[in-house]
Length: 246
Image 1 (cartoon, rainbow, N blue to C red):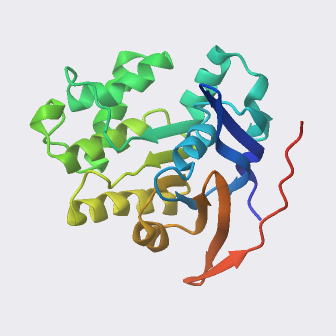
Image 2: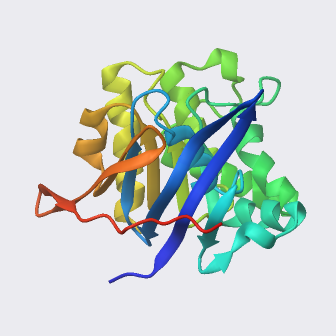
């Protein structure tokens, strides 16, 4: 069994809305092994976006713990967490989140700037990544000069800039037509075959079942089921009992 790269242990996330307490996640255990391709799936309001934020170390729990490569991140300072997150996790967003006044190449270079890499290295790596995404003729184009699929591939290239162990993609095909979406998922599958841990958040069971190897289904802030694919067949796995600590 491969080592765990991310673990949410009895994780809960609550929000106060006036006099009400909204339990976005309520006692969730998620364990992700190195090299896995994981889908976190659920309808709107199921808690999958909150699960993504916790899994990606973008937020901390109300109760419970988050471990990233064995390190409990709950007690880290925000500056430490940002550095760790910047090195270990690459993010791909549904809306692409490219900087409009930067070229494709400059967008890919940007995360490396925050890791204090020198300009020559940033340029060389950005060019290499864009070529791997078949965008060598679009490097100096701005986002508004690119199609949706091209923007998503720039976003994938940017997510790989700091050589992260994990790629976390939020609805990576949500704004794309079917053919372009399949192409983007093909790039993610190839990256997974090369050893990258891929986590996608989706409401689409076809995307989840086609590409993932592990599937967490959420409903009303709780894990409804856990399935794993073996030899092309999906099998349900018994969920661990989750008891929140006070």
